[in-house]
Structures are given as structure tokens and as C-alpha cells.
Length: 284
Image 1: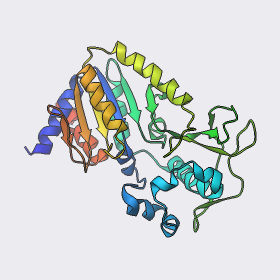
Image 2: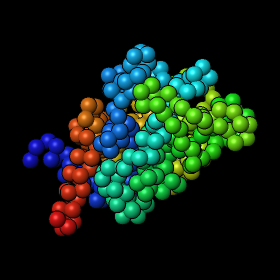
Image 3: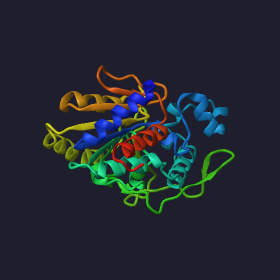
Image 4: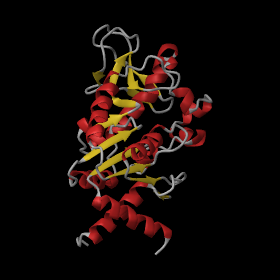
């Protein structure tokens, strides 16, 4: 049995014995569904070639100033992502997690930095979900007129594939009629409306207080160190509440002593663990 096999077996054993599963995810989780890998400028530019010609990186584009300075460029970028995320089917790893979580006495919790809405699309309970960087499926008024956060249902943005600029009407605020923007945390973004995030965080924190002493496993998928919000959440959870941290990350699988790291993609690792669980339970 190799090191990965041993780690998969240990993960399956811990998951089987757990009373609560905590699923955390970063961008690497979405890559296995076919979403672009924005790690490094080259990965970003492969997805958005016209922005390479402009010398604009992901960090440069994910900035609220474009909604002020060049709204058609801003909504070209976010409008394309809105359509892409809506059309992307979550990979089978999401279904594994959901099935495992539904079997547990205390169920599951989700904490993700992904803005793609994939956990909701995969059937997870929105009431058990924290999207710490917001979500593409919600909008806010760029001018901050007091409207509050509103749904992007029914909103679509036509994008010129040659320039990646929006063409036609841009999303607007239902209250003031001004420009809308995604309710997503951007770089250098003092005006992100965190009301929805607070509505997710506060109940989850209260539930974790009630989970004190429960056997839990944190299953982290594709969360890197560049923006370490998700990694910190998982490490702090097991430090505070006990349990096992299972970190699935192709490039950065390192874990604190006593925990499990798998240098694998999310779907491959979750498929392997599901197979090990089925073998343990005699389901073949």
C-alpha cells in the first residue's frame, strides 16, 4: 500500500466515524468541473486572451474600479463568468460530499471562497453554506444607493467573444436604475456589501458552538495559500473543535502534524475515498 493509499484509507475511516463533516473549497474544486485555472497570469490569459493584449491580470481585472472607469470591460469579464458558471455542471465529487454529509447525525457545513454557486447547484442546503467571497448569483448597486443585495436571476449579459466586452444593456439597480455589480469581494474593494455573508456566517458560528465535542472531519478541496481564507478556516476549526483535517491539493497538500494531505485533484481524491468507503461498508 502506497502513501496515497494509506492516506485515502485513513480519510475513509475518519469520515465513516464522523458525526459532522465540514466541506471547505477553493478554486481547485471548480477546475475539475472544467472551470478555468486562474493561478498565474498565463492560466488567466488562456481563458481571456483579449486581456493578455491589454496586460491585465486576474488581480487587475477583479477590481471594482472598472465598473466606474470602463463598465463594458468590467461586465464583459463578470458577465462571461456569470454565463460560464451557470452552464457548468458540478463534477461528481460534489455528489460524493453531499451523500456523505447527509448520512451524518449532525449533517454537514460548507465554507468556500468560490463565487461560482456550484454547491447550491449541486444540491447542498444554502442554509448550511458560507460563501466568504460572495457569489456571482447576487448583485449590489455600484453606487450604494441603499437597495441592498438582490438576485441575479433573470440577469444576463451579452459578451463579444473577440473583445470580452459587454454589448447591449448592463445590469442595473432596481431601486435607482444605476449600474449594478456582482456581490463578490474584489481586490481593493471597500464597498462590498457583506450583509448576505453575515447572514451566512452568524448562524454557522452558532451551530459550531453547539457542535462542541462532536467527531468531525474537515474535507478541504483545492484551497491554496495565495489567498488562504479557506485553509485558515479549516485549520482553526480542527484546532478549536478537534477532529481531522483532510487537505486535498495538487500543489500544496501540506498539513499540520497528525492530519492528512493528499497531492491529488479534488475529483480524483473524492472518487478514491468514495471507493474506499464503499469497500468498508461492503457496497463494492
